[in-house]
Image 1: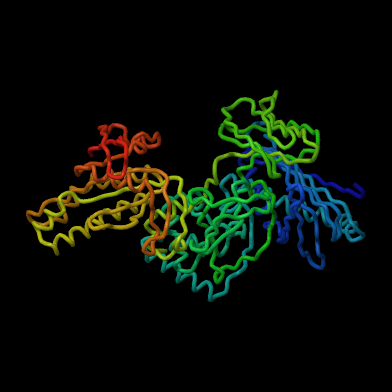
Image 2: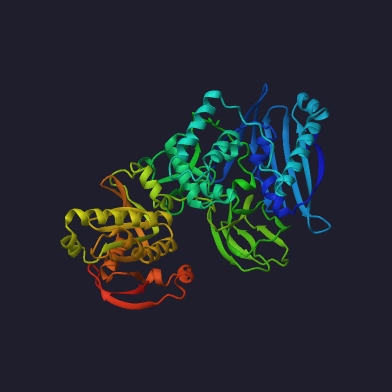
Length: 602
C-alpha cells in the first residue's frame, strides 16, 4: 500500500491474557476513553445477502467516510481491524493487538501495531508529525489503567471525564435517591446507581443490565432488578423492551412498553429476520432518563469482540484460504457459522482438539484439526467469507421478559405495562404455583365471615412475601386461592417449601382463640405457556396452567403436589434430597389420560 507507515508498541502486564483481553478487546470502551469521536454506521446488503458496512464521522473540519471491515479475532489471542477511507486525510487505518503469556507464565505481553496510509498532503503531514506520538501516549495510559483494573487497583477500567451535570440535576438526583431508598426496593444501592448514571462511560449506559450490576456489586440479583425497576418509576432510569438478534445478540428493535412490542424484527448487520421469544430474546433493558443524562447517538466501535462476547473467533477467509491460528476454547456448546447469512453447525466440545470450521460452498462442515492448541478454518467456497465460532450459551446478563414479568415488584410497579389486546406471547417455560385453603367453608362458619375474610387476606400477605423473596409474583387471587409464577423452577419449589414449613408459626401468631388453623394445599408444575392480557394484567394460559391448578386440587393439605416435570428435574434434585416423595397417579379433570405426580409431605 502506497505510503503505508506502521508503529508498534509493546507492553507487559501483571495479569494473564484472559484478564487483560476483556478490557483491551472492549474496543468501544477503549475508543471512548481514548477520546475518539462517535460515528454512524450504514449497513447495505448486496444481492448475495452479504452486508457491507460504511462509517461516517466528523473530526474537527474533516468529514471522514470509510468502509469498515469486520474485525478478525481469536479470544484471548489477537484482534485486527481495518478501515478503507474514501474521504479525509487518510486512505487506510489498521490496528492489530496480540496477547501472549509472559515467560514466567503468570502475566502477559501485548504487541500493538497501528498502520496508516495518507490520502492527501494533510494525511502525509499528520503521519509525519504527531499522529503516532499522540496515539502512543494514549495507548500507554490505557494499557497501564487496564492492568491496574485487572489487578483490582481501579474501580473502572479507564479514566473518563463524564459531562458535568447541572446543579439542578444534582439536586434532583439526590432527591430521587432518597425517594428510591424510601421504598422496599432501594436495598441501599440507589446512591451507587445514581453515581453510575452520572459518571460512567456512555458504553456502560447504553444498556444498563441489572444482572451485570448484581455480579459487579456482589449483591443478590433480585435486589439489583428491583432497584432498577424502582429507579424507572422515580425517573432516574428508563425501561425499554429490546428485541435481540439471535445471531449477533444486539438489539435491533425496541419498544417503551409491552403493548407496542413488535412480533419480530430484521437485523441489518446479520441480514436476517427473526421472531420474538419472551424467554430468550426479549430483554428488559435500562438506560438513564434523558432528563438526567442524555446519551448521544452513534457508535464508538461496532465490531469490537466484547460487543459480541459470545463470538470466540471471527476470521476473514479468501476463497481457498486455510488458516490455523493459536487458540483454545473451554468445553461447552458451540456453533460454527459465517458472518454472512447461511448454514450453521452445532457442536458439543468436550475438550481436546477443537474441530476445524470448513466452508464448503454454502454449507458449513466440521473438518479435521491436527493441533490441540490451534483453531483451524478453511474456505472452499468461490467467494470471501467470514468464519465464526460462537458459544451457544445465551447472553449471560440478559434479563428476559419472562423473568422480569414474573417478579412481584414488576407487577406492583408496572401493572399497566401489558400486552396489547389480542396479542399472545409464547413462553418456553414458566413455573406455576397454585394454592387453596383446606376446609375454608368450615373456617367461615366457625369464626364468621368478617373474621375469616381478614384471616384469608392476611394469609395472602404471608404468601406474597415468601413468593416475592423467591423471585416470584402473584398473578392473581381467586377466592381463597393464589396463582403465582416463577421464571425458574427452583424458586417455585423453595417458595412452596417455605410456605408449608412456615404456616404453623404463622397460624400461632395470627389465628385467635379456638379458630381452626389455616391449612394450605399447593400444586407446582412447569412447562410452556401463553402470556396474554386479561382484566388489564399479564396472565398465563394453556395446559401448563390447567395442570398446575388440577395438581393443587389433588392435595389433602399440608403437602406439595409436584408434577413429574418438577419432581424429575435434575436441577431440583439438590433441593429434594432427603425429602420423601410419594408417587401417585390419577385422571385429572380436563385431561383424557391419567397423570403421574408426586406428593411431597413437608
